[in-house]
Length: 153
Image 1 (tube, rainbow, N blue to C red):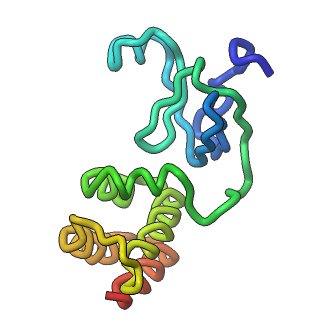
Image 2 (tube, rainbow, N blue to C red):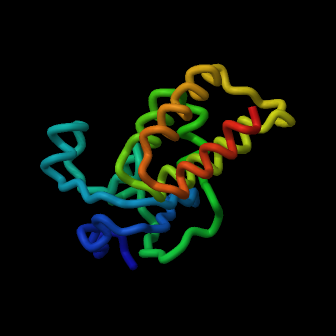
């Protein structure tokens, strides 16, 4: 489907798999941003979709589809969130999207594994945030995943 023909509004509040023009694949809950909003907020008059803290303008989207399940327990968004730092990770954890939290926790499990040589500079803050999240969340699955991670440390 040609990018100009994509009806991006139909992906609003849907879980999607988005492929960028550079071939990168992103998965998550999409939110539609209109052209006027993007121009006011970001200085670019082009509509797009936001997944987590990534904004994909129409011209960046090669293909997109609604998905019932994701290809992997976590993906590029979660990996980049962890690399971008504590503020982004904390925002995703305490957002209302339980699926995003599950995917992020799956990714964090890799980084907080004692056998993983790639350590996070913000690990102490992250562990404190995970304790707060465990105590805050009403979602039993998220609480269980968080407990498993905390027990690794």
